[in-house]
Image (cartoon, rainbow, N blue to C red):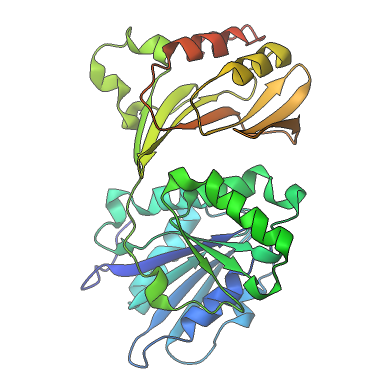
Length: 340
């Protein structure tokens, strides 16, 4: 797909957030800061087939808004998104671009698409922004959903909306949330009525250092070593490590069909030492279970069906993970082999 190359890469902001978090309110506030001589463009994604948010944005000269309806541009086929974005760039030649994915989307996948080499000369990606509703932080049923967590992990900047409506319980929940996600190098901003200046979020995107590899059990058998590069890891299972701000996250992902023995798995997680955070979701013989451990509390509960089995452990000290992985795999009940 060919694009008319702009004179320079367009500063591009992804404004993500869970349903009702206040993404469109923030976007309207940012758009109000457009210099008179510039043209700004917005690409919006609605999960349904009838677009509403577009009608809430400025319609006057200097703004170009395009909606992509039906499905999620983060995780569905890339082609509709690429076509829509290519047309918006070539027809509008904007000075700045905002992308608002659906609240049901996975912004990390969208960011991965837009940082591919194909887009480097066209887009200058800015720090990914996730909006959370500060007045609902006390609602654990809301804030503990897997999609909510995925959007927080992807963000470099988190905007806490409805800050003027936060209660004491929300303030305490915010402190806890900041502690949970301290390994992800995030900046937190409070906003009332979306009042955030463009300068506060206009920061270049900085990719997280992530090393994705086959499971540790398999790495010694893979020749040549180049097979362990991130680009080669396309299917589950795999192991990864990412680092930021002096913290590291060791993680594993396994196929959804793998099932684990709940009690040995729980025992294994409880036996771990020298960690700052353990979070996971597993398909077990007790149903799908989520684990959310911090040094003060070991929480686990039944949860909705996940897209895969996964676990992340946040830590600061160097550690040999091979023994842990072996014990983790020993909790598997299914007969799948690692090569399937």
